[in-house]
Image (cartoon, rainbow, N blue to C red):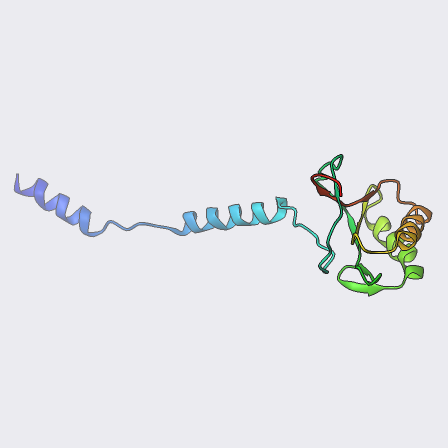
Length: 139
């Protein structure tokens, strides 16, 4: 009886918990979620979108082009001239050929500028061009 109790005490003193496999598993899960997560791209400017009752939600956009109320065009958070839109869209489409373009124009921006940006995107080869609007009742 004495030997069994002494053996249990000896085994309990040498008990160690190896957490290295647990840490490895946590890092693998972290890498998995970082690789599979798609990050939301923004235009980098504050834009008041017009509302439309027929607007539908679009889940993915490769390239966002922002047009502010003072008619400044932004791509990747940098102001761009209207003449440089086509080259930037061509460069983006070279990286992702099936990419889509979303134009996020302020409701007070000039319609002619929005049309020029859409035309430049079409000339660059973009097949899927959308204009962003807030979902709701039209004004």
